[in-house]
Length: 390
Length: 139
Image 1 (cartoon, rainbow over the protein chains, first blue to last red):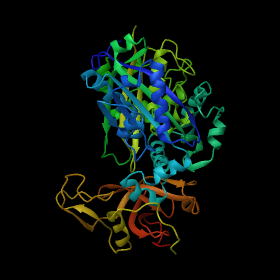
Image 2: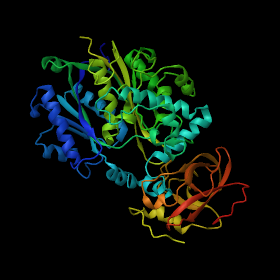
Image 3: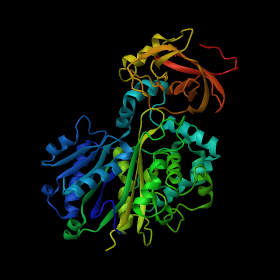
Image 4: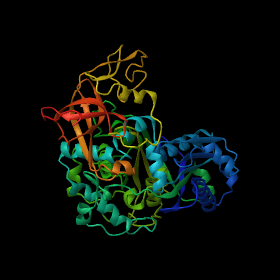
């Protein structure tokens, strides 16, 4: 499949710097590890990379420019993306336009963070102006309490139950059990889910991602360059972003995806029925369910019924979801969480999945979500990728 | 009683104003004098029409409970001392979504009244109580 929006843009060399719960290293170590793996696996020189798109919370106060100095790179194109879970697709979109326009030839897209508990606590304590002034003083430390309310409202409006959300968590755990990079691989039963320690009702421990340390990265270049280098690659068919979508909604029950999904599929000349998988942003299961709805896999409010009737499994499921286990089971390495789904999508399409491989995967959709500032996430993204057709 | 606890950061001057208006007889919030939009989270400039002409004034304190949660585990040890505690999202009739502290849990859809108070930690916060619940302020 070739894209009419991004003709000849290649996404290649998915790299994961293995996740760990704790480390003595700083974020720059993980960024450097990602760069080193990109160079080695692409068979290129560091000097071949002339663009960098970076997302990292814990690298602050250092920006992407500092990383150029740190790692001795001279760059003609640079973006720093502090949009958390939306940053992966934002990096991909911007890098695609950069190589298309000739502003850059080879862009390294990297999400990396050192998000052990202490760092996570510090991040959420002083995340943003609104969160510092109007969220933290209420004891809604971190996004969990906000998502608890979004989840409660969704359950109230659409009749979803905890058993429904368990379907997402359990399906992803089953996928993670096959993924050596997942930090959480212990089998999860419905009983485990329902009896898990309550954090902020209705959300329990098993509804929350585990902060951890690691990095995800990939390269964006022109397809002819990838072919010359002998690199297997995927194509970006279409992508979109929407920030502060539906800001007049009293409480979040949909995201910016609902604004652009129709145009996104039109751009790709495909529909939801053509997608071999959905890699949705899953910091909490309710958000993954909103993406299922808003990206057209069912209508708004029909998500619970979909979960009751369709399998999310990579092994023959009607809607394979987060086929590597997602952040809920792999772990959330800060901003790398926004790149995790892209790398899983690229690997599925290259038939290089570290865990379960969807047979004959040809194209799929990956979505991002980020920046919970006050009472909702602000940034929504999505990208449709396909195999190269070679 | 004010417990010894400092927020792990400095609140903005604007947010500190919530402490100044705590326990006023009327509920005050910044309101745009140009388009009348209520500004919450507090804004120095109107989030609707971008006007700088924003003034604190009396606002209807009634609203609807959108959702609430009981927090059982917090990352901050001082908050953990008072778990479980309840917080909620209120849609103010005057038009703004408020994150509030709830002395008692309120079911979604119930009507509430909101006021600014100073909490146990000495921070100015918004507190909501169910209408007709007989709950007294500062209980």
